[in-house]
Each structure stands twice: as C-alpha cells, then as structure tokens.
Length: 217
Ligand SMILES: C[S@@+](CC[C@H](N)C(=O)[O-])C[C@H]1O[C@@H](n2cnc3c(N)ncnc32)[C@H](O)[C@@H]1O
Image (cartoon, rainbow, N blue to C red):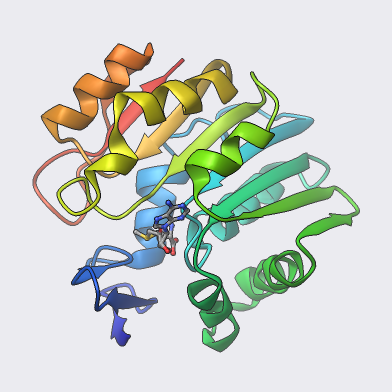
C-alpha cells in the first residue's frame, strides 16, 4: 500500500486493489472531524453515555477523533464503541502512525481493542466485529446506536455495500434520532437511504465541491 501524507499532515494509504484512498487527500483527520464527528451531533449536548458504530473502521480515525472530542466535552461520558472491519492488516497499520499526544492515548486504547476484540476500561466499552459488516451487524441489538460513521470504499467500486438492504439493516440498529454520516452524496446511495427510512440531508463539502450526506432516523 502506498502511504500518503494528506494536507493536514495526517497519514492515509491508497488501496492498490481498488485504486482508492482510505481518506480524502485534503486531510484525513480533518475529514473525520468535519465530515463525521461534528455532523453526527454527538457533540451537541453533554451526554452520560453514547453508543457509536464505526462501520469500516480502517485506521480508526473516525473513532479516535470522536472519543477525543466527546471526552473534551464530558470526560465522564461512557462510550460504547462497536467497530466493524474486515481487514486486520489495515487496522494494524495504526501501530505505525504517529498522532498528537492527545490522540496517541486514544490510539493506544484502539490498539488494545483491536488486539483483544473486546475491551472494558473505565468509561469505555469497545467491541471489534472482524468480518463483513453486513453479517456482523446482525449480531448487534436493534435500536442500539446514537451515531453511525459509515465509511466503505466508494459506491462506484463497491455498490453492494451501499444498497437499500444494507441501509435497512443499519436503520434497524439505530435509535430514533440516530445520525449516520458518510462522504458519498451519490443519487443511488441517497435513494437507498430514503427507501430504508432515513431522512437525508446535505453534509459539509470537504475536500471536494459536492456535499457529504447526513441521515437521520
Ligand atoms: C474508506 S476505508 C475506511 C477508512 C476508515 N474509516 C479510517 O478512518 O481509516 C474503507 C474500509 O472498509 C473496509 N471494508 C471493506 N469492505 C468491508 C466489509 N464488507 N465489511 C467491513 N469492512 C469493510 C476496508 O478494509 C477499509 O478499511
């Protein structure tokens, strides 16, 4: 895999098989914050607990930034993090990436979760679902998540991961008012989200002219 330094200084990779990057070149960590964490509304109110699904975890930037920002607002918030990924190699690349000191602590937490598969530590509970998220999600309770970061490779390359059936499954796992964030605004994707029951809105434009997408249950 080719390593790429994005415009905010954070590292991403290019997946050779799909000829696609794991993040936007305009800034990988910036993308996590502005395309996923802020639009997910998890920072809008101080919450005692939050259930988050990180679908297509990759290097885990969406989870790392989310945890950091939530605990800045409320260090006592209990975070339940469910991560879904089918490639152990990309998750292990996180070991070789340096982050700032604040994010390094959370990186260590993520590496421990990846190693153990399940982790309980103070105000954190994490569970790794290693496999195809379409199967693994079926093992989660319905109406569980407050926020879903939905981050597969692009619908052009893997349309089967953006189908109505997939969004219906995710929808079932969301609480009422749960927000799903994703970078794609493709018509086919948004139609499938709507058919699954989500209300669909434009998200921010980051790294390109078109908006990302925010779905609300
Ligand atoms: C665009 S990258 C995600 C980037 C990631 N959110 C991050 O912050 O690094 C897509 C990820 O989806 C994973 N993936 C692809 N198909 C999958 C599937 N069916 N189930 C779970 N993960 C999958 C890939 O291995 C890859 O890590």
